[in-house]
Image (tube, rainbow, N blue to C red; front, side, top):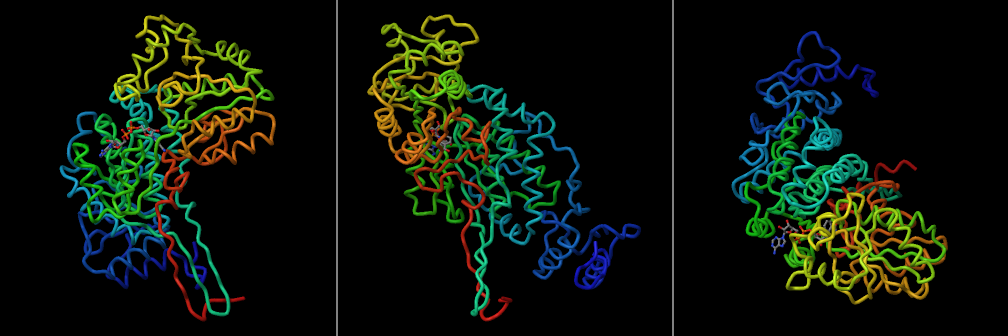
Length: 532
Ligand code: NAD
C-alpha cells in the first residue's frame, strides 16, 4: 500500500524508518519486511524489553505501517498461526498468566498494561480476536464446557458450549469504543475511552469460563489488563482458560500477562486482589455478598449481582409458543443463568391451558403437597436459600432424589403455589418453576415487579398487547426485558444484539462491554484543527 501523503510505498517508508533507527528489513520481502532480531524490540514480550522510550514510539510506528501484522522473530511463540495447546496436567501449574501469589499476579498485570498502552488499536483487535479464536478452535469449546460442568457439578455441558460460543462471537471488541469530537471557534476537543489500568474481575461458579472470556475481551479491548479471581470450585477450568489465552496472546506478540490469575483461588486471594493498590477497578459477577463487598472498597466498582427473573403470560399471548419458550429458557444450563426464568405469573384465564401446553414440552407438574414438601426439604438449606449441592442440577436428578422416576424428556419441574412460597421468593438456580396465578394482566405486572425484588436484572413477558408490554417494561426497570421469547434471547441466543455475561444492575452499567471498562477522557486542542 502507498503512503497517502507522499505516494511512497508503505514498505519503502518502513525500510526508511528501520534504516534511520539502525535496523534494516530482511532481503527479498519488500512488501512485508521482517523485523530484525537484535537491538530493537519487535514485540512486547518480556524476553527482550527495550529501555529506550524512543524505541517504543518507533516500534509503534513501524508496527502501524506494517498493519501491525508482523510476527515477532525473537519470541518463542511468534507465529500467529501457531497451534496453542495446554494439557490437563499443565492447567494448574505456574506460568502463562498463573501466579503463586496475588501480589505477583497484579505486578505482572501492571507491567503488561503499561506496555499495552503503546500497542495500536489494530493490535488490540488482533489480541481480542485471538481470545475468540483460541477458544473456538481445536475442540476447546467442548473441552472447557464439559470441564466446567464436571468441576462445578453444575449445569449442562451442551448448553455451556452455546454460552461459551456466544461469549466468543458476540462480545463487543474495540468497535465499542466510539470517540466524540466537538469542534468550534475555540478549536477541537476529543472525548475518548481510555483504559482504567489493572482491573480485578471476580467470576461466578455458574458461568466460570464465559465470564473470563467475555470480560477478557471487553477489558483488553478497552486497553486494560485483567486479574481474574475465579470461584475455587471452578479452579482448573478457569486456570486452563487463562493459560490458553496467554499462550495465544504470546503468539500474537502481545505483552506477557495481560490476563492473569492465581494458582489457588480463594476468598483470601480475592480479598488481596480487592485491596491491592495497583488494582484500579473491580468487577464482581456473583451474588449480593460479593457485589456489596466490591462496592464498599472505595474503588470504582461494577457490581453484577443476583436476579430473580419473573415471566408474565397474559391472555393475549400465543400460549403454545409461550409454553415452549418458558420451558426452554428455564431449563437452559439447568437454570444457572442469572437471566433464566425463575418464577411464572400467569393470568388466571389462560393458566390451565398454559400448564397443559408446558407439560407437552417437558414440564413435570407436581400437585401432591407432600411431594412439594419433600422437594423443599431437598433443595432449601437451613438459612432458607438454595442448597448448593442442588444448584444447577437437572430436573430428572432432582425428581429422582424425591423418589420420582421421570424420563429424559422432562426439562423442568412445575409447581403451582402462592407468591410467598420460598421457590417464588428465592433465586434457586435449579429447573424448578413455581407458577402463581393473577386475576388480570395488571395484577400480574405488579406482582412481577414485587418478585423481581428491585434487582433491575431481567424479566420476560408473553403478550400481544403492546400497551401492557410497554407498561411492564417501564415499571420493572430491568436491564434485560425479553418480549415473546425465552430468557436466553436477552443474552443474544435467538435475539438480536451483543452479549454480556456481566449484567450490572446494582451499579447501573447494565449490559457491560468494552466502554464499561474505560474512562472518558478529554483532549482539548485550543484554537486549531477546526476546519469548518
Ligand atoms: P457467589 O456470590 O457465591 O460467588 C461469586 C464469586 O465471588 C466467586 O468467585 C466467589 O469465590 C467470590 N466470593 C463470594 N463471596 C466472597 C467473599 N466473601 N469474599 C471474597 N470472595 C467471595 O456466586 P456464585 O454462586 O458463584 O454465582 C451465582 C450468583 O451470581 C447468582 O446470584 C447469580 O444471579 C449471580 N450472577 C450474576 C450475573 C450477572 O451478570 N448479574 C452473572 C452470573 C451470576
